[in-house]
Amino acid sequence: VVTVGFCQPISYGSSTILAYTRFSVELGPPLLEFQANNHNFVAVTQDIQEGYIQTGSKIAKGKGVLCPVPLDLDDPSIEWGDKTDIDVSKKPAIKGTVALTTVAGIVTPKLPDGKTGNPNKALSVILDFAAGSFVAKDLNVDTDNATLNLQLQNWFVTNPIQYLINTVVFEATTLASLTPSAFKLNVLTTNSKKNVLQVFIATTGRPQSNLTINVNEPIPDDYHNSLIINTKIMFEDIFVQSFNQGSTNLQVQSVNPGQDFTAWKAKVISGTVSGEAKFNNTSRSETRIAPGSNTITWPLEGLTFSPTKNLGVELKYQVKKKVDFQHRSYSCVSSGEGIPYCSWSGWSDHSVEVDVSLTGYYPLTVSQSHGKQDVQISSDPPSVTVTPPDLHPTGPCECNDNDLKIQVGEILKKQVPDKLKDSMAGIKFSPVSVFALYNLLFPADDFIVMGSAYVPGDLVIVGTFNKYVDA
Image (cartoon, rainbow, N blue to C red; front, side):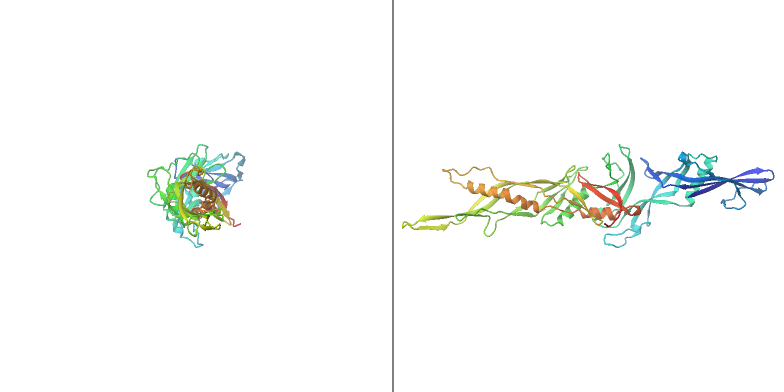
């Protein structure tokens, strides 16, 4: 409820009439309208839900008496007239321009380990009504609007009101590259006339002065927010750390594109996957990869992970590999006395060249469980193909091992891909969800509920605001 009053002295013979006006209204919640190209102020409209204007007077002895400062509207010597209700059918409102400011210490953050963070490292964006200007609109009353507007502004100055917009926590909750060091605000009006408040967060140095992003609609329909993380941080820190802590023995490193405005990617620098070859050995023919083992080990150096527009992370690997194997046969030779001599031959060495291709896409998914959110690589494995050489069987007048190579190649084609698929899936990007939940805070215990994730270059997560409920 806002109650303001003002006074005007009127000469009356040897006395002075002090004419009072009291204005009292109950305001609805503020409607915020961020102004394009104005980073420091927000237009605020609060509907008048009910209220009244009342006039009164008292006589002061003497000429030239001034109104008291401050006014005391409860002075019993003031004779007040009847209250005139404000006609709310005209949609009266108080409109103002309110400063956006940042202050530390008004929010005490929670940390992932359950401990309490440092309030001085939680910088909040607030609407500071004390640093605003206000006017009354569509009031069908007979009063001095200029004086009324001045008193409204004075009321907000002397009755400080602040609305919390959001808080950025400057404490390390996850990776150093996701620890805010500074931020800037920007307001964007999109092509579809959406007013979007942007918070540009720097984790090293200062935010750049150019706050333009090459995205026409940064928040899709049906969503409340989007979190966009720079492509370098995505692949150099989030992807590499998450992948290298996974269950495989593969190690990846980021690949710098070497020029601005170009997406980063990652590649495997060490590690192998293996598959088991199962041969259809008989009592007269046996094939193996090596003594005591049919395991084929595949080094995957050079396998790349690249961003895609909407299919997640693209996996690509192409190599020609020579697979060594051994073969022996069981044969019988007549001794001349009618009793054949049968024995296994020694193991002979052979090899076959196969083309190994891993292609596919790892979509990003968001999982929700008991208040815990995870952005992760989908558990759907990529497509793997092993292509044997295009050989023809050994002819009656030929002497080669094509038949063995064809057999081994077909076995590899059928059996190895599934083994390779199983080795690479389900990598979680846990630092992202920690950052979204603990470094970006919103009023009323609202938090970002991540809906979908993409990596067209930068990591893009779109979501809604929901009050936290531990289901």
